[in-house]
Length: 459
Ligand SMILES: [Ca+2]
Ligand SMILES: [Ca+2]
Ligand SMILES: [Ca+2]
Ligand SMILES: [Ca+2]
Image 1: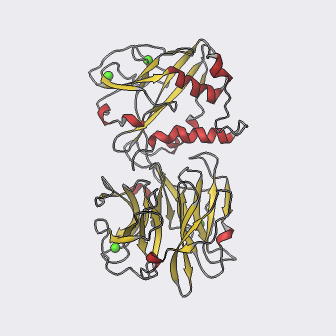
Image 2: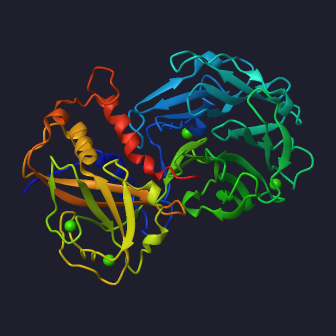
Image 3: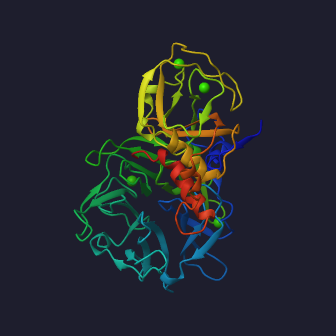
């Protein structure tokens, strides 16, 4: 029987292709080859939707100063297919660097050098994503800090900002060398205050290039505390606590030094500047952990009655390597659908070394499983939206995605055999997911994003 693989799979499979050791948490970093040149590519920032990579670029044959660019792609995790210079911000007297863009893509924070060698933090706001960026205004309460801050990064609510000092003029009162600092404001109309040195992560060596997760609980940054400039990650339990758990991300190590990391909003990718070639952009991905999934435990194969108004039972199978209590149940999606119920029970055993559609009727194996129930019609609706017409007897691969409570993404698959017919009302609906009247790649990218959302746990 021929298997029609779920299209959403394309986005997810990229992680496995990039590979790396199954034991490593991050894949060995690779260059983002489609945007790197012999000139300087620095300061990566990935937009919240994963579709735009903002960088600064400079030191070309005709122009020395850095300028902001936006590389774009049609689906998260795919290659970037276009590059736009953000020309509306340009001016002749210095660098424009260190972009940070709000999740709705309407507010841009960046740095600009102004004679005599001052670094100014700028804020620009546009009315819609189709409008050009107006030249930014100064955030003067932070620019007053020795005119030398760099690398702004904000939480999604834009009420907490992190930044670092510049190599040539450290902000006084730190731990030594460059340091990372934090400031907060009660609302968007108030100035930033409470300027704090992050003494828990700063050392007498240099720290810089911070990038914070949307809710502010994970911070990645660079430091040369070990000699070479490397990427580090720190976490905290709440916004009121100091960061801890400082971890050197050795997967991002490069011979010429790695700096100015950007953590993607879902926490699964880190873009950074590789020191070679005047600066290139590289990326490392969080390794996904594969889990054993059994659709209809105790049944093999797994028929799915397209007209069923009931629920589809699915189990994530525990093993010596997987304690199912470590799974964040709220993160689980099967074909993009959340379960309606969950429980812990030993119902089945994993198939050993099978291909993706092998299955078993073997029952309990002594390892507790996470059992889940999904509304069958929600699953059917997702499949119809994706594949259109469904054929009785067809074999389909379904993808389950989620995360462990420590944030590690998990992924698993099992197969179903379609039985019967899709209810007529559902079949009549189109695949025009973004309801713009056209069924095209934009519908796919919107769905692909949704498909990957379960990994966006609280980082
Ligand atoms: Ca320092
Ligand atoms: Ca380069
Ligand atoms: Ca089964
Ligand atoms: Ca079991």
